[in-house]
Length: 101
Image (tube, rainbow, N blue to C red; front, side, top):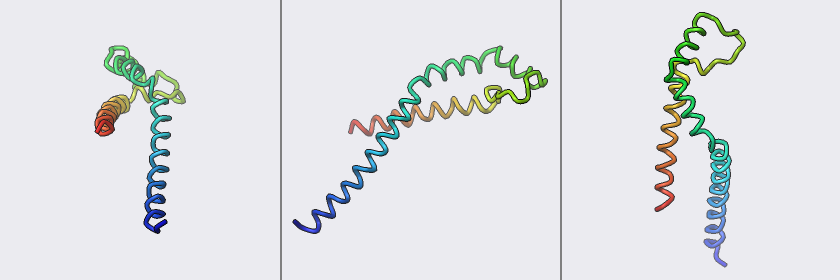
């Protein structure tokens, strides 16, 4: 056996381990994300509704307890989350295209 063979197998083993780790991590992340599209749709509908505006105004007047989490009433928070989800969708589609080649 040549030294080049050992080097080649070692290099490919490193690639294998990196890819294996990345595939497992992405699979776990996708498992976590699987129900998110429907939840994001519901969140977008709420954010665009009069109900959200009413809740936002109540929050501006201090009607909700100060210790109550209410990030959903942040004007930029929900918008940014929805925008990030759209960008993630683009990335996933682009990645899927690369995997077919």
